[in-house]
Length: 275
Image 1 (cartoon, rainbow, N blue to C red):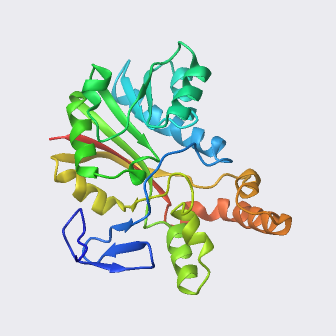
Image 2 (image 1 turned 45 degrees about the horizontal axis):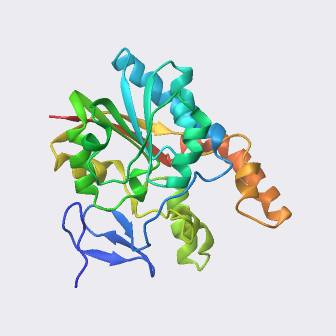
């Protein structure tokens, strides 16, 4: 059966054995098996910096917000919410991750065992001002159902926040360029191939807006987040066995850190509000 784009129903072309691109809207998707797992190690500092940026926007929009995070992973976003004195509820599909989060936060935060697209409102018995997907939305199947169940769990004027890598970014496009030359490791790594929770989608802001517009959401606020820290050695410790490669790529990313503000950004965030 011919594959069609889940966003615009356009025809798609094959990029490699597991990834495809819509010819019409530019949406990338993979045929990798869905899963779940902990956060990629070595990203704690940069992720917390990005979370602070998102939380500062939230606090400017609403005092005392009630937030649900979908897929809380190692709990970095929850930690920042606690620091901001924000009412935060976590969730995890993995029972092992759920157990770790409950042990970490004890009675400070309620953590739900939630595997979308199951009903959020039935599981939580409450509605939220913000539902946040931090590097999670691109790992999910049944995206139309996920948006529907999220919308039902929002308060009036509630907002869905997507924080996700973008296919417009310099890293994605450079990895695609290398893959076309036969160097596949970086492209595979971006999709998290052979990892517990591979990427199933790569959006840009335009096709992500198109997806949400089909559910009567519109872009309320958007921006970009940093993808690299000034020190990336811990990230490459988890990627390369070779000490030489770790050093070379750490130096490259150290230099790249200072130029990234002039280049296409690799992580976007969008606040979606229902019409």
